[in-house]
Structure formats: C-alpha cells, structure tokens
Length: 263
Ligand code: NAP
Picture 1 (cartoon, rainbow, N blue to C red):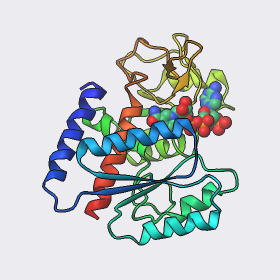
Picture 2: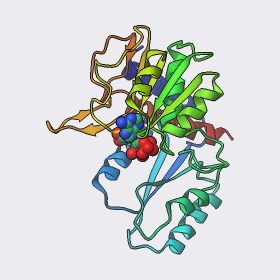
Picture 3: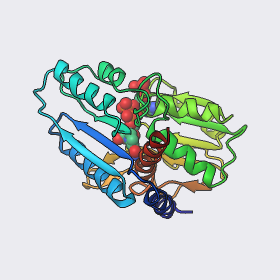
C-alpha cells in the first residue's frame, strides 16, 4: 500500500474507534516558541486530531517564560486526569533545558517517546516500523543500515530495528565512504536520516531487493522539499519525500495518543 493510502486507512480506523468512546483521547501541546516551522508542525497535529475526532489542544506560552513557570505548566498537565498525551513542542528557547523538559513530562503521557522511562516509542521510528510490518518487510534477520545517529531518529530507529531482530549497522558523519558502500552493498533495508539532500545517489551499490526509507527533509535550492535519497533508485521500494516518513511520523503520534488513552 502507498504511504498516503496506508495513513488514510489507519486514520479512518482510529476515527471509528474514537467514535465509540465515552471520552475523546486528549492531547495537550505546549508550545513556547514563535518558530514558523514549529507552527506548521503544530497545525498539522491539530488537523490530524480533528480528522480522527481526538481532542487536541494547543497551550501557547511566551518564549520569555521562565523554566520554573514552564515546569509548573507541565506539572499541571501531568496531574490533569483529562489529559492523556502531553508534548512540549521543540525547539525550546535557549534559557530552557531540553533535557530537563524531556524528564519533566510524565512517562505515562509522553507520546513523543522522549523520556528515558517512556511507555511509548518515538514517533518517526515507530511510524517506520509499523509501516514496514504492515507491508510485510521481513525484519527478522534482515541487514539494516541506519545513516544518522541522532537522539530523535537514528538511535531510536536502530534500537527498534534491533528489537525486531534486524542486524543493525549505524553509520554517521565519521564513517568512511568505502565503509558506507560496503554496508550498503549488504543492506536489505536502508534508513537515511542525515539531513543532506540527495546524499544517497545512483553511485552506491544497492541490492536490487533493498528497501530504502528516506527520513530526510531538506529545503532545496528550488524552494521545494527533498529527501536524503535521489528519487527512483534501482531498488525494490523507496519512500517518497514529501508524502513519506513525515506522514508516518504524524500517524505514529495519533497511535501513541490512542495507546496513552487506553492505559
Ligand atoms: P541531526 O540531528 O542533524 O543528525 C544527523 C545525523 O546524520 C548525525 O548523526 C550525523 O552524524 C549524520 N550524518 C551527517 N553526515 C553524514 C554522512 N555523510 N553520512 C552518514 N551520516 C551522516 O538530524 P535528525 O534530527 O536526525 O534528522 C535527520 C533528517 O531527518 C533531517 O533532514 C530532518 O529534517 C529529518 N527528519 C524528518 C522527520 C520526519 O518525520 N520525516 C523527523 C525527524 C527528522 P554525526 O552524529 O557524526 O554528526
């Protein structure tokens, strides 16, 4: 199934599930920035919530708020039984510690999956794994290469793939190009989460049966969005950008919210 079709199908199922509930699952988004990219992400979350009938609310605070006052707001939401899921939209102002905020959100409500004791998988890797499973990609014993080792994508992606019995190699900016080529030549699954437009091009020795998941979102010189992977490589499957992993990430947040509600 194409990603767009898959996401629409899952959302329709969630909507039916929510229609039967006495109380709608509630997600509270705390935003403490005036960042236009963040505004766009938040709009997406509000729209997704409305689409499936969830109660998604935005609590926008001044970027000048003190860390102490922000923590009070987080504590209030942690203690509010009507709130099932709580996210603090990144980025945060410089005077607020991201690590401390991630620890402040209750692990029971942390639908972003950022807390070390969280009950939830982070949205981008979760969305990817759920889709691969649905499409019947044989994760067990597969050779997976993850390009990128960030806290929000590369590392949790590698962890989830390992939990699903893949053999995982994580590559990064210090990896030698000859090694990148070596591992790609053996890869059944390649997840590119680097942030460099067209980094994976025709010059790499892909297996023709390989699946490539393109996480990258890069604004090109043409003003359009591009992935880390050039389109139409000679492989079995390749996710598009836009209309690929971004949609899976948004869906995974809704799935986590539903899970939080059920718990
Ligand atoms: P990030 O924090 O900047 O991390 C990038 C990673 O790529 C780092 O680990 C870096 O290595 C590695 N890297 C840099 N050059 C490389 C190279 N030549 N070969 C292999 N690895 C290389 O970025 P991120 O937050 O993980 O995001 C990555 C991309 O995904 C961005 O384009 C971002 O916009 C996009 N993204 C998309 C979604 C979505 O929903 N679709 C969600 C999140 C992020 P070092 O650790 O050595 O620096």
